[in-house]
Image 1 (cartoon, one colour):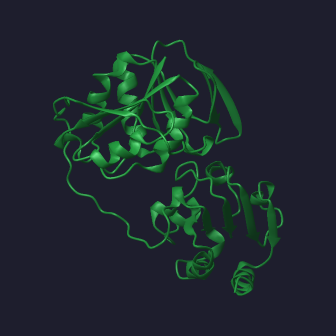
Image 2 (cartoon, one colour; image 1 turned 120 degrees about the vertical axis):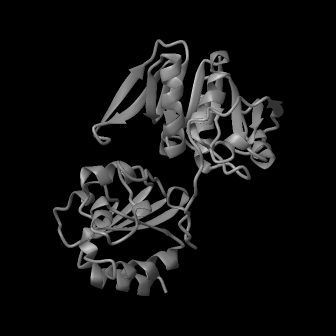
Image 3 (cartoon, rainbow, N blue to C red; image 1 turned 60 degrees about the vertical axis):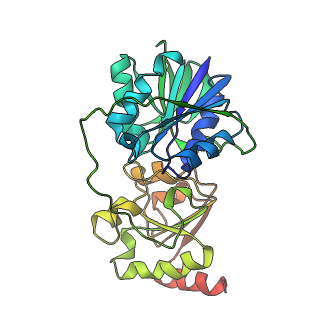
Length: 309
């Protein structure tokens, strides 16, 4: 069996989620190919070739792939898919936009957001906001799978895969790139950060959110938020952690003024160490916290910053 991994990249480098997806693929099939569909993407292809376990990197270089438009990338995947037993992509906005199109055209059922591979045809995935784990067996000839990155370790460096360039399919002509607005921050990217400091509705206002900045600065952390804080307009949408936001699993997650609604817990409960600060001793966040402090955050956070020197 051979698996095809759709690489998420920016033409210059691979996104971290691709490494986790390759680990999942290695548990599905003995042979792993990686598709890098982009434009002037030789650097990303070279990075993919250095990943342990990858035997071949397939490069489709065309201007139609420059911005990762799902319609165009899906067409490229479909031109190759029947050669493979498994087609996998990260369960990010990128992968979730491409693979449902692929599954529909192949007339197979997509298996979404797997967190474990039991066997080449059997997988585990969270349901009910992570409160239950479903074991899914597929009898489809081609398994189309999105991979939740937090469920798998990143694949290591040290490979020496061959790189093969192929002819790109023609543009689907169904969509076009208009513009991109990127949030600029000196902090680590939320899904890749090793430490995250998150605030909730208990912070009270956008102005009050600044109380978390010195703590994040001391720890070199990314900043996140609950959906309640985002909906209240305290912080931007791209800070949201949770079932309908970003799924994270840092080494340290500090939840400040977050009650712990089930949707939020689904997005961060796989963090290695969870610290919760909340004045409500009954807050659900304490059920998943490794360390909990029942205190007024406006006193506790400055005191913690002071202790950190």
